[in-house]
Length: 405
Ligand SMILES: [Zn+2]
Image 1 (tube, rainbow, N blue to C red):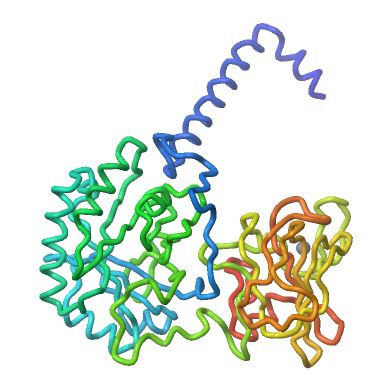
Image 2 (image 1 turned 180 degrees about the vertical axis):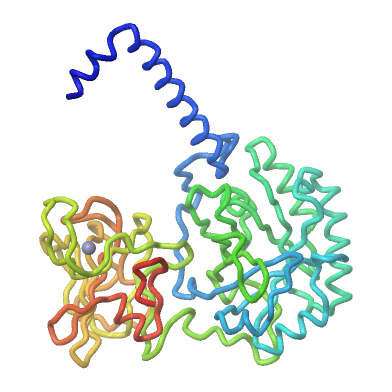
């Protein structure tokens, strides 16, 4: 059919059609390239690993936080959504936090984190700009009664080129103050280069989280509580540096659910479930088979956590499951974790593990076509839908149309 059609169109038409096709492809390529705002000027490295490589994210990586500017979401709605920390601007004007707003957030048990941004490219003013911004930020912090020792995050809100980094570091160094230490908000390279605990945005970060990152912004422009907020996670509750209410923030189990159940994966980045529990086409054998787990797509090397406390009953290579760990939680409940890389285990057979303890890292061993965690839940030896099971225990593993909760 195709050959006959080609003959019908004839050679005179073929050349212009090819040219048109080439033009369309060129436009598609240009659009694809320019819409990659992650690194528009290509001064960073896709696949950047940073001096320390990817972060180790503790189980507290699931603590939910938001930041916002001129929006005023309802504090009660934020708390009901599980927000533990609200990041706010020190600023004299509409985007700035007020004493009454801090009091309202504190009254609901939420901590407040402070950020200063005069103008996005202010850090290019170097030490002089840093000293000036620090004076302005500290004056507001003092007026609001922010306890001394609370860090102020200074925004480096652009894609810093290699040539600009020294100037940006001079800005941060000049902003640093014994009363209110200066920290950075920015892409992975800024957080790596400054070396202090930082607030990293997913932007300009190539999917890599710095080992210095204690606060991670992973999604912008979300509607919550009648306002528009950005979503963040606290990766390190001990070092995030928030102004906590009297009695402190109840950090809880960090997104954990009931009866000790917690997410088996890192949640500092949205990990979709790529394949659900149920009868599915097998990606390698191309036949419909029963898929007994949820495939949580994740970066190679990301941490895998015990979904609950228990005893490791299996830690070995297991055919199509690859390098596999099984945990017996008692009462006939067992969880299984597949496809870890060789050497990817962090626990041994017989070891007792706590809920949320790291047991291994994500890999693609066995019958797998890419790095992911295949996660199973078995009750008395029978597999159940892990997403439904976790939902029933208050743990939301994923979002989207197939999500059980
Ligand atoms: Zn699977």
